View (cartoon, rainbow, N blue to C red):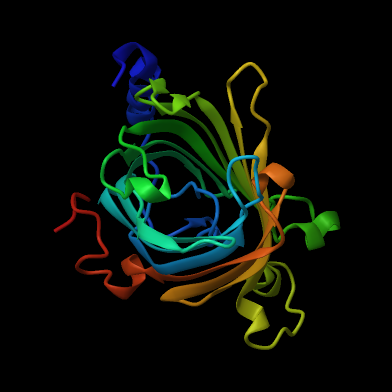
Length: 309
């Protein structure tokens, strides 16, 4: 790791650590606001959670060198709190790639490891801020599916903000919330035999409208089950390499819905490429997500170090 490049990450983390710690609580809450775990973008909170599985199916666009291909993935992600405000995340994905007119190939992608520290939690304003560092561990996946042999480091900042503090005159907008993240993916090797590996700006955000918040906090509009626990949302994930404008912006829009119970949630989204370079046609993304902190609040769902007996 380049110490100069990543020195600012340590500085930000040190400043965050000196701030007044946010009160630890179960997954995704700030005041009366529940933020569901987003499927395609990084959410801002630190929690004990398990996504098992997340599955997707989409199609790439053809290029001058490669045909269009169907890409199917299945992944597992687990997040564990070390302290009430600091956690680690691990993720592993299996990819199956079927190029048009050719035999399919499959294999595991690189292991992903993430660290996240939640340094702001404002209950009244329904607001969360965190900093983190995601690392793609090179050489832990299959090269034939595109897994790199070198590490990629992505320091970033994450936020969540509910609009529950809007005035009564805008009460129907109060169920709205937005979460998002911004980071820079920095390959450990800037140049390989295959060519240059530029740093990339990665931006993701989600706009959510919580029917649960509408029903329980704003106004009881008589929504029956299962709609009273639904959160319609739209996620956007974008990437832009820093390479003198030679590479275009790519990404996807993910319209969908999450149903959140007390112990788990279900999510289903469409995958809509933002341009031809991002993909072809509409894909699908689905996830079953467990709240370990609610399933096992007195054992594995607790932070490892929380100062309580």
